[in-house]
Length: 385
Ligand SMILES: [Zn+2]
Image (cartoon, rainbow, N blue to C red; front, side, top):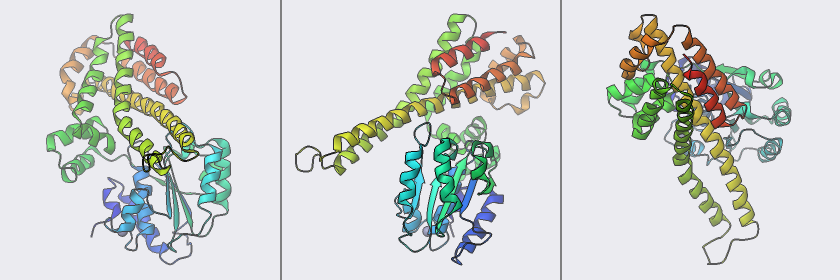
């Protein structure tokens, strides 16, 4: 029999816990195994939000998460009345949003089972939002289950994390990701291995590379940047290239989504149906949606740059591998010629400094630094010998 937990790659230790919690939840009351607040942490791509959604499905589905029933399906597509999946498109979750959420989930579950809230980016809660949420988690309605996700424990207020049962996800191995791509996505073994390696256990990114030729050719351009850094002009050019690719990437993913959302909203306000304009509040709602979309686009560009910087980091990581004589363990085996040339001409100590520079730029970007300026500063540092 299929299970929603089948899709979780390399998380056997967690699946066991969630399955016994699901079984315990059938007894109705909360038990030690089935608690009302959970915190899923793990590196990007380890699947913390997919895990939380799978658990929500298991709790709601009459067959413990069978994948195929209408409940499982409704939870997954955010269409179940008893499940809220909070995906943050902006840089933070504000207190007003949490207050609205709390009003919505105050009702008893419509189907008589559990009411489940999945919060995919609990690390983006502002302090006041976190405090508002804390009250709800401290005095839970007996039928509400909170599933919070964050990269690490430190990203969540201590008061919140101390009230949650914590589950730490692992980064799945290259082998596990390769197998999933071959078996479930029907990707050829060579492509699957390539995608699994370059995405370093990030299953979503691996799938993206394996299925998307533009993504692969963009990656190629980005991975060539280190070899082209000589002058100040070339460094600035490299920064521009990186930001352009990230912006384009974010644009293609978000544009079609934006249009559909606006159309749906306009329909909801009655545009088009009778030839009249939208009902009162319609254009205001569309404006608000467009504002949200803009903030989502900003975040997507940042995420995309972050992904490119992580790719770049693997270049310097591989240089260190070549220089230490372990060329057999390259992440970017497709670039072995470039890596060999670069390694021969670059001092052994410089790769560490460059890796540090990349990680520093990532944290600057995460703190809202201007993307182009951050990338320019980074490329200038990478251009140094
Ligand atoms: Zn089901």
